[in-house]
Amino acid sequence: MMAKAFVVMQYLLPRYWLTALIWRIARIRHTGTKNFLITKFSSAFDVNLEEVKLNVPIDFATFNDFFIRELADDARPIDGDDDAIVSPVDGTVSFAGAIHGDSIFQAKGINYSLGDLLATDTNEAERYVDGSFATIYLAPYNYHRVHAPLAGELVAARYVPGDLFSVNEATVSSVDGLFRRNERLVMHFLTATGPAVLIFVGALNVGSISTPWTGEIRPRKTGVVDVLELSGHPTQVQKGDLLGWFNMGSTVILLLPKGTCAWDDDLEPGETLKMGVEIGELKSAA
Image 1 (cartoon, rainbow, N blue to C red):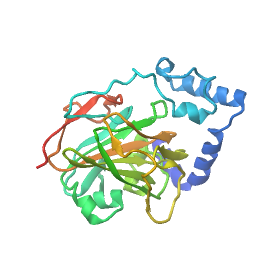
Image 2: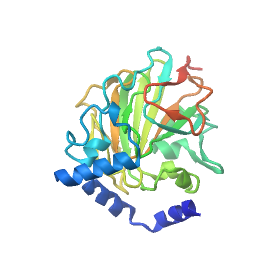
Image 3: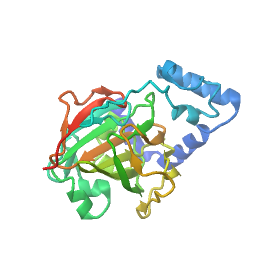
């Protein structure tokens, strides 16, 4: 009952105003305030502080700086097998499996199309028809940096304006086409086995998405799709390289073409992942 009430309430809430408010609160620099926020958040969500690179809370200028914290250098070893696809994030598997035609599974009774998700020309969507997808949810307590799941070249990045519904389980199970309705950053890669896409999905209270190429991208509900400039940072990435971060929690979606991927047998809904662990294996393109 509470979950349904939360979903209904989101239609009534001023989602962009609330997200902007959270953005401001997360960037308060007053020492006592930001230390209070960091300490209370860490305690409430049982954040593992032992793996954090800096001292908590004193080395963080704001709560947001803590939220997008770096981890110690050895905290997330990257699977070194050349054929291994690794988890780009710490998180929980929402769903992973096959794309049926151009239809991606969201929740029981709810699907959405590749074309709507990518919001680009049909040729790009067609590359992933009958391919593979993995949707991974980042809870507030998770490490919120996003890393390359495989080596390749970043060839394009597009920001798609959209809504800001929550991406928790209750909302995903109730809001039709949630991932193609919310704002998102779509990153296109060229790898040794063909193209791949990694998508940052925005959400309620996600004040912004940042990458080394684009800097901070603030939410925008409407407007045209922005083709982002990539010349300011090297576009060749190795597996495990930093791609960006969520300023508050959300979801990532990974797309691979038909015949190029075999997910691990245990990549099932509810599976908890750490960034860098193998989640699948690359195969030669069909």
